[in-house]
Image 1: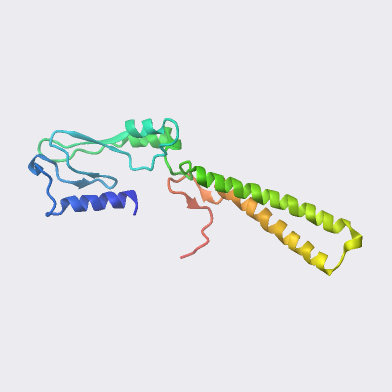
Image 2: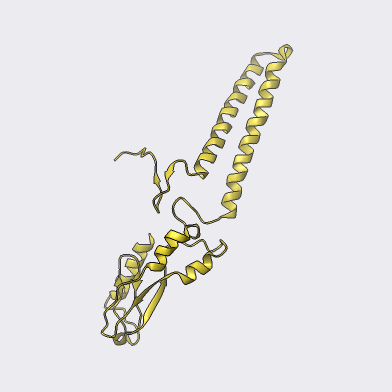
Length: 194
């Protein structure tokens, strides 16, 4: 479920007749503005909410960005809502893209990074060792036999497989397969035609 779907479901829940806040006559009705659900705000007050992004709070300074650049909306005395002000979120998108997951960027994950780096390292090491084995297999004419030719073919297949895996790993982590100009990245080539 996406953030906006979750927020819309929250508003639908709060608009349900069976759910009533304490002192509900002094509150504005729950309202979904196509991004966030606004509820439980006393008339005359302004409510602040975090922008509807996934913030990478483990990056230095991003927790401050998430706390200070927020959305605000005022509940007027007559019980109606003012327009939401998303200026802080627009500022996050323009000046602090490194703080959110989007545009082909993920939040840091040490385990994922370790696994990807280890996979790349082991693939390169395998290619190097298999190339050395192939050179050794081909250099000694006195030990040539059918079994050795099978092992040469196996080593060549492993070289091909691990080289392809290393290239794929580098291309995938550098986002060569995606167009990163959109917030939600899209594939450069649509392989599934509908």
